[in-house]
Every structure is written in C-alpha cells, then in structure tokens.
Length: 222
Ligand SMILES: C[S@@+](CC[C@H](N)C(=O)[O-])C[C@H]1O[C@@H](n2cnc3c(N)ncnc32)[C@H](O)[C@@H]1O
Image (tube, rainbow, N blue to C red; front, side, top):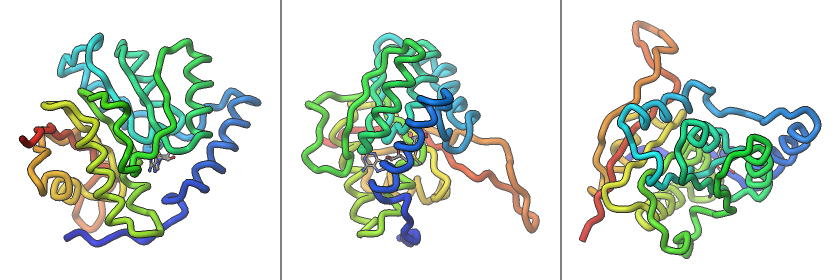
C-alpha cells in the first residue's frame, strides 16, 4: 500500500480560494491568466495525444477535474473539441476560468463541484474523457484523512465516466507505478499507455521526469 504524503495547505479549499482571488485580480488588472501547473508542454502533450488518437472532437464529452483557471479546457477548445466541462470546488477558480474563456470567446461549461461529495453525480451525465492535472495530487495532500479522500475521488470517476471512457491523469506527487496500482486495484480501470515527458533530470545514474501522465480505460463492472 502506498504511503500517504505529508499534508500541505495545497490540500485545503481555503488555500485555493485565496490563490484564485489573487489570480482574478491579476487577470483583471494585467490580463495575466495565472499559474499553468506543470507547464504548458504538459497540457499540450495530453491535447496532442487526444488529437493523434483521432478522438471525435464534435461528440466526445470531456471533463477537466479540478480545472483551476481552465488552461487545459481552453487548449482543448482551441484544438476544436466542442463538449468541454471544467469543474472545480473553488468558486473563485470557476469565476476566473469563466472570465478567461469569455475573453477568448470560447464556449466551455464551467461548474463549481466538489468531487469528494458523495452525492455529486453531475445530473447523471456520463463523460467520454476525464482529465486531471494536479487535482488528485492536491487531494492527496488534504490534512484530514487523505487516503479516504483519494478513494472518494475514484468513486466520483466511477459515477461520471461512461463505459469505455478514458481517464488521463498527470501527477507530480505519485509515480506512474503508484498511480497504476491505485487506479487498477479493483479492475474498473486498465492502463492504456503512459504519455512520456522528456527526461528532465538525471541523478546518481538514474534518469526521470518530474511528472507522470497515464491514460486509463474505464470498464464499467456489471
Ligand atoms: C494543482 S491545481 C491544478 C489546476 C488545474 N488542473 C491545472 O492544471 O492548472 C489543483 C486544483 O484542484 C482543485 N481541487 C482540489 N480539491 C478539489 C475537489 N475536492 N473538488 C474539485 N476541485 C478540487 C483546486 O481548487 C485546484 O484548482
């Protein structure tokens, strides 16, 4: 069983509300869209992977879990994907994401949603693709019972994903192996592939990347 991470303020709603409050101010004043977690290239690799797999841009419904300022949602919309939903539990994040999308004339559906709320099923809508960049990481840093929260996160996926859908997760806190073990342990998810990042460090004869991006297929159990 993987060890839990040390808790951090990044695992609290208060932190995200304060962060996005400042980012709203910066956006209004300077047009600065705010932090791109793990860099632009990381988001781009996921969008390019979907494009290369010729995912249907008109009809695939995509949800970005913990969308923050909506950077990935905008990139998907700019690449021609038409059905994009971004959810985040921070009202401020959703306010910022809506302002940015409006400024770019992009049509993205943004909602305030706490994915750890057991009642949340997004009005029974099922998504063909879910992406996450940094949200499972943030949840794993909750000061209060992060292990239970990581399982609540997985239960959310089970409620909102369509059969045969894809789940693409990028993490900086968990290795590919840890992500694979956690998401495949009860057989709902199977690994499709790892979207490799270029080697970004070399240490003591080992080489590696600071983030892991994995693609899973979701199979609904009967
Ligand atoms: C590291 S940021 C990543 C933001 C965005 N995915 C990106 O790549 O720029 C983590 C995000 O997860 C959101 N988040 C954390 N816990 C959440 C929860 N329980 N439900 C929904 N969003 C959550 C935070 O508000 C924050 O926007």
